[in-house]
Image (cartoon, rainbow, N blue to C red; front, side):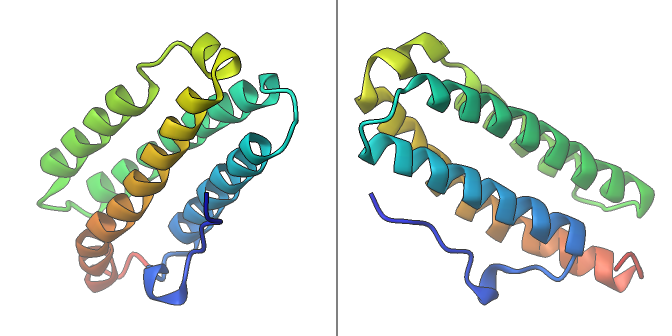
Length: 134
């Protein structure tokens, strides 16, 4: 598994959002490192719990900005958030700690999701910048 990098082209220019995206990348990379080592997989379950918390917080922060600045795509963007949470975290964590392949599959899914999500955020951020939000 490759280490993820948030290259400059994926930085959106909103400090709070970019910092949260970077933290998500760091947690995914930490998960990858655990899976590639002989470490106890129980730490992986803790990291996934932290990822879930961070993603929910991140989505809430984005949604608050969209409401505050009357983003016209709010409903659609929120639906994408809701689908992402259901798909990503509708998994029994005990499977992660007992089978490394389940952890690897989830890490790969999170990696793909994160970069797709950042690209989807670009339109919202562009709108927010025009509204003077950042």
